[in-house]
Amino acid sequence: MVTAVAIEVVHPGIRSTGASVLSLFQNLLGLAAGPFIAGWLSDVWSLETALTVIPAFGLLAAGLFMITSRCYEADLKRVDTDLREDRRTSLKRAELERLKLHRPETGGTTLVGPNLRPGIP
Image: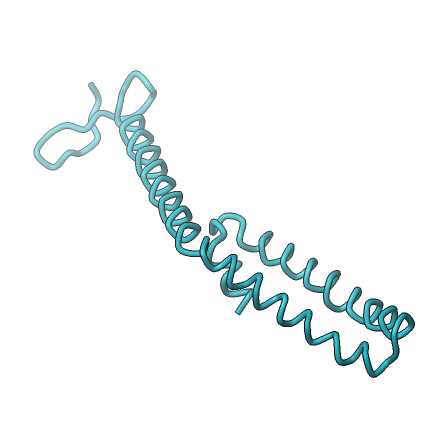
């Protein structure tokens, strides 16, 4: 679920980067630090107490997910707005290129006649 949310709220142009950063932090904080923290807690207290306390980190994560869920809708709207602006910009750029191709002063062809065939001015 975390991966789906992270990818959904990242601009499509950098989604692969967002997914890789998410994967990096999940591995650094979860897979690498998890056993170290469990070992440290078992050294400080006992193994039984450490294994009893470790699920509290899951509750902490659930609480943080609930807090960050407040920003989810706003993030989706921001990405949607950015996508619309990008589409408008690319459509404007394509229209300008199309117009530029059909202007003689820019080296393009002139469209003449009812069928709009390229002609010589």
